[in-house]
Image (cartoon, rainbow, N blue to C red; front, side):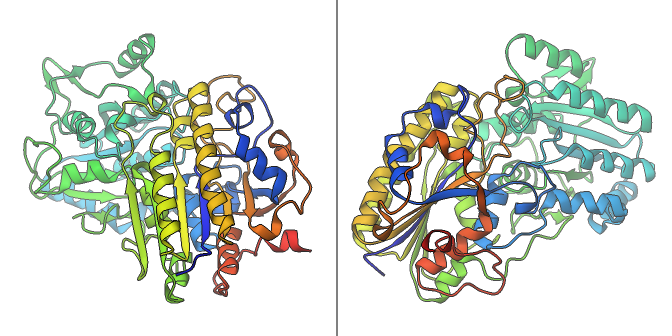
Length: 527
């Protein structure tokens, strides 16, 4: 315990881009952020592509960003790992997939392929679905394969779902394998904030227990677009004719959920597979239902995992714990898993001496209705713990820049970052006054490009832009050239997310483990 804590502040989705009308960071009034840049050293970090274990040019994500920050090393991420499995042919010999195939054959039942449509690559990838269709065709499950698809519109353009769907329909016709059974926006089927009413709607169409039936998915999406309801919020529907769905889920069926990211796959998996599920009243529990996820979404779920999770030997939290230090990880619901599970190297439980605090995210339909989200609650809790002098290290995630940025509402996004700016002032001033140290950074970009620089359209997706890093402590105050927020983009990228953990360990007076490849960012400014 110390009166001089080290604090890591992660501004989720806060990248650095050219100053334009669509940049919520440079167009907002950020009095304290400007002060930080004028008085403390700052630079840019790479947070996308190969720097975080993704394919070249692929935008970063919260999951990947927090994993890389906490590990201090680069891991080949799920997207790239699965792509390589497909290219080598190993995908088609995956034991978990073959178990599902044989389960269907042995029980004369059906195979359900479920997941996010499109090429966003954050939670799933259309290429993986196409490979699964190919696998089903090669195993003669042409008439036994059904697709349950979530439309994206968040990590892809808001109205790109129709194009993606047409591609899948073309593949189905070409392979003569599979049939689309249900559609729904990710808002419903991929909720992660315990909005069980949303999951219930998607669950109903996936299991075929709904009365909402349509016979033409393309026409239904076009109608929805005409009403101003795009992919993410597309109302779940089941395909069917003459009052009967294309398929009803039955005992002995098999499901392959092709989302590789766990956080937005857990609730639907729980609803389908956990017998004593409490989220809503299910029509039935299915017997002998075999479920394969692209990863192990929750360790206690009765499911198979097609791909093993990454093993992180010495994440930041473990090193701090083994040094006998106390630490606090704090975020709101939407990003809670990121400052715990992902930051800690995919560990389900806290390390000794580590505490977690969860602030509930607002219960609203869209976060532009409450752009501040739970930022002030988090700030108050952090200040309380700093003053109690209980923790040596505190990590904070401010979710609103990313979550409000995903709404595509520029004015609300400005309010989100302005709220965070106010919180930064109180936290950082308190830490520095006590002789502590603060590192402010982000996991990936988003809110800096609400209007796409090239298309001039609303952009709800993450970006490839670098992220900022600012180091604040008494010794640095006023020692470096002043910078303006609008000029930050012109700086040279001098590091990557792998450098954050070594920097924190240096601030705490600890040696970095051999597994960490990053550098201490303080070295950039102390020469």
